[in-house]
Image (cartoon, rainbow, N blue to C red; front, side):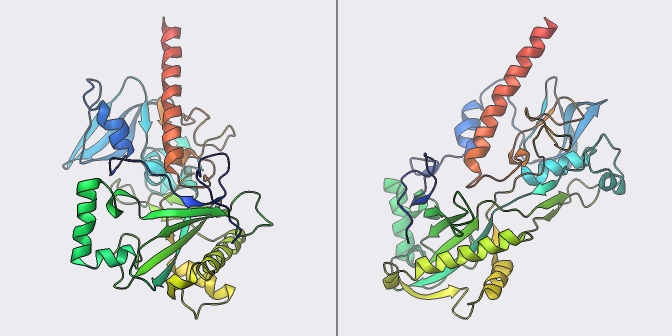
Amino acid sequence: MGVPRNEDFNGTDQSGAGYYQLNTSKGWRCSTASAFLKPARGRSNLRIETGAVATGIVFEGRRAVAVRYQQAGVLKEARCTGEVLLAAGAIQSPQLLQLSGIGPRALLERHGFALHVDAPEVGENLQDHLQIRLGYECTQHITTNDQLNSWLGRIRIGLQWLLFRQGPLAVGINQGGAFMHALPYEAQTPDIQFHVATLSADMAGGKVHPYSGFTLSVCQLRPRSRGHIRIRSSDPLEPPEIQPNYLAAAQDRHTIVAGVKAARAIAASAPMRPYVRREVEPGPTVTDDTDLLEFCRNHGATIFHPVGTCRMGSDPGAVVDIRLRVNGVSGLRVVDCSVMPTLVSGNTHAAAVMLAEKAADMIRDDAKARFSQVS
């Protein structure tokens, strides 16, 4: 297909096909909870509250001084003498700001909130990677479907992990993939990302199909469509309105259809032909661009990379400044993917960890500067 092999998607060149690098340790996923939080649990200045839902930020004048949260039906407050750090993600960080009186004036007044800061962009600029999954039946019994659909296969998978920390349980669902050009004359860098899974199901994480199957999924890396997050009421426990507005931009529609065509071309290539019995989805009846776009609209799903709803910038409309401080108030920062002005061209996890590391440095530096001024 003309796509080169790439041993390191995080290296000097993102383009190419290869195996994904994983955050794993001894067969376990190494999440930020296990890598950062677990080693710090014994610190005297750290208290972890579980089963708790943040409901808003408490202000004294223009300064954030506490977080209000609900736990076991009881409303509580966690107060601070330093800063409140909001890290609830691109869906709930803007929701909490709106619930705390920071957001679009009309929205907050409609739900009866006192306005702290008229910030029209809080909750706007929502971006996400839309995933389109193409399902195939395999000619050979070599897929994870075959292992999961057999009690002997499930035992084998379990033993692989228990004895050797290897096998399907020790890796991600999508072991391989590619960054490539669906529109080679319109994008200077890769515009689509592939994930290849050795299993197939009606939905990600669902029960696998009864036949041997695999999945090719494609997402557009730099979508131009923008959506929003908005509170529905004054009830902090009510989920916000989530409108991703996928495929609203013509460029996004053009790119995603080209991406599906690229996936089909890979499946139809000579090396793949011996393994493909049939294309299950979208299926042979879906042929022209109009039908392909309709398939994308009806079957596309989030790949869980929402960003942008508390946009960082140096312009008047930005929600946070370049040091992640919420504009219009003091003592409050947002430290999550909601501050990204635009979506990164890949999975957001590594970028989120980098952002948090950088924020930690800035918080320490600013605290030292304040201490020096007081001294």
